[in-house]
Image (cartoon, rainbow, N blue to C red; front, side, top):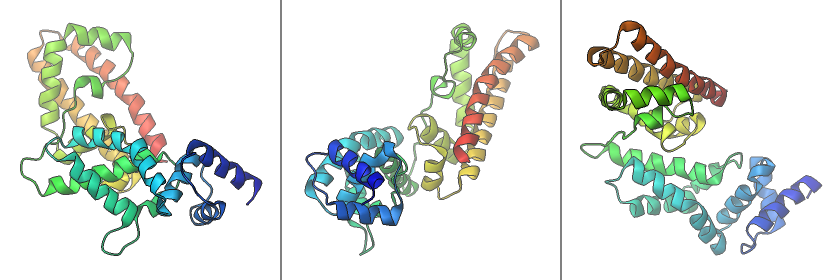
Length: 260
């Protein structure tokens, strides 16, 4: 192995001392997937060991990533049995389905293994939900959607808290269910644009446009509802909405960066 590859191997070995993986197996994985960034070398090393069916690796991977997976699935689809989804995840990721290759072979090592597994688990949950009646779509709140430490935004929300929450909830309910799911996975589950593209079998630019469209629609609906209910003049309402929109513009920029 080259010096760089040896350093990556040693980083993974140090992170998972209870797991045994030969340098040759790791070198073969890197030949297939490319060298992972140093920050994710330990994740790639563990994924390689799982593909080698090392029992300690499978146990370590579950212990390290499944709590995060379970939390994401429970928030996304609380009616579903988390254990059922995790079992399906094990089958697809580590073993393969109907004689096919384990899905873990698709993991590139260029991102966190836990986030990748979470995206796969959410996709499984989505597929199950599509066949279930009364699908739950979103439980976002205004704090999730308008995150940030702007003192002006905090002051505005404290003044109009009750009406703002009602207006936001009503506006969100008018959104297309698929766009609700885009917002939920992005804000609550922390999936990036590329991960969402994998979940929805789409492209990163398309997902970015959908998220921007969803925010714009919720913003406009919230504006209309607040205009009807708040006892403020038009200038004050516009000031409130400009403040909200300025908060959202930061997210739009981040989405474009993520999609590129």
